[in-house]
Image (tube, rainbow, N blue to C red; front, side):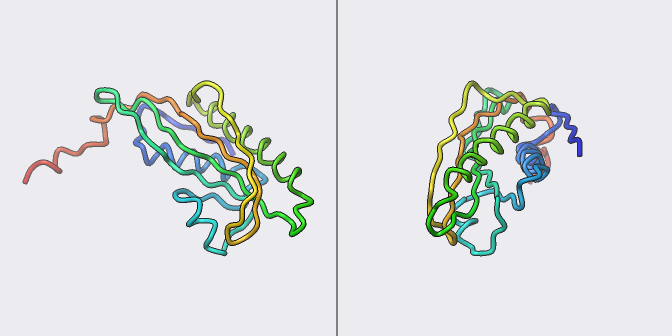
Length: 154
C-alpha cells in the first residue's frame, strides 16, 4: 500500500492519523494506538507486536505549526523467563527505524538523530521493546483550515 500526503493542507489531527497509517501498514504490527501508553497497554485486550504513538507537544512559530514532538513505542510480549528479550528488543529497533524511515519517505522531515530507548516492563502483559522521542518538522499555517471564523461570531 502506497500512502500519499499533501503536507501543506494537513491539520495536526491529520498528521497523527498519517503516522498511525504508516505504522499500521508495517507487516509486523498487529495493533496501533495513540495516547497514554499505560492506559492503552494495561487494558488487557491488546494484540502484539504493537505500536503506540503519544503526542508530546506542538511548536507554534507565529501563525504556523513548525514541529510536532511525539513518542513512538514498540512492544511485544516476553516469555515468563524473558528468554526472548534480546529478540524482541532487536525487532523494536528494526521496526521503529523502518516506520520512521517510511514517514520521512512520505515527505516529512525528522529532526536530527533520535535515540531508541530499550525497556522491559509489566503492563497487563510482560512486555519488552523500545521507544523513541521524535521531532517531526512541518510548516503548516494555522490560519488555513484550523481556525474557523464562525467560532468567533457569537
